[in-house]
Image 1: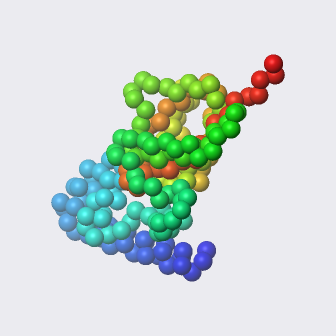
Image 2: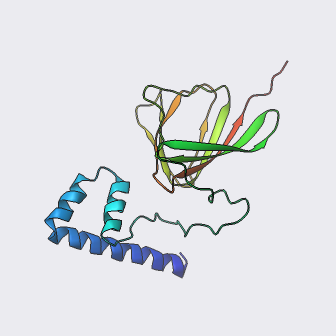
Image 3: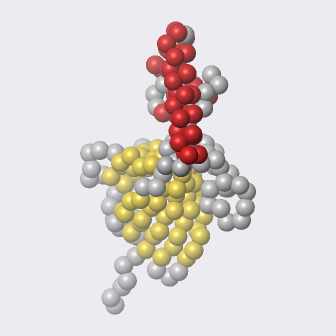
Amino acid sequence: MAEAQLQQFLEKVRQLNAFVARSETDPVLRQALRDCSDHHGVVALARSQGFEIGRRWGETDPPLAGHDNLLMPPCPAPGQEVTSVLLEQADWRLERIHSCQASSPPDFWYDQNDHEWVLLLQGSAQIAFEDEAQVRQLCRGDSLLIPAHRRHRLVSTDPAPGSVWLALFWREACGC
C-alpha cells in the first residue's frame, strides 16, 4: 500500500473512532445510529456530525472534469438510470449505465435476448437472479456475466454519486 493510501485509511479509522466515541456519549445520536437501515444512512448521519467515513477502500477523489471520463457525467435523479451507448457494431454494443438509488419495479425480471457482461466502475449494487435464493452483492471492480434469458432484476444501487457500470451486450453468431 502506498503511503498516501495508508494515510487515507488511517484518517478514515480516526474519523470512524471519533464518530463511535460521540455516539457512545450522546443518546440522541446513538438512537439515530440505531435507526439507520444501511451503510448509506450511517455515512449520511456521520457526515451530519462532521465526520467523513463514506469513502470505500481504494476510492480516490472524484476525477477532474475532462473529455471522455466515464465517471464525470452528473448523477441521475434518485430512482433513475441513464444509459449511453459508447460503441456499437452489428452483433454487440457497449453501454455506460449510471444508476442512482435505482431498482427494478416489483415483480419485474429482465429476460434479455442478449448475453450481458457488466463491470461496476463506481459504487455498489445488488442483483437478484430468479434461480438463486441469495441476492448478489457487487462493489466497485466486480464483474458479472449474465447469459441470455437468465432472468434477473436490479435490487438496489447507491445514492449520489451513484453506481456506474460498463455493460457489454452480444448475441451468439447465427450459424444460418
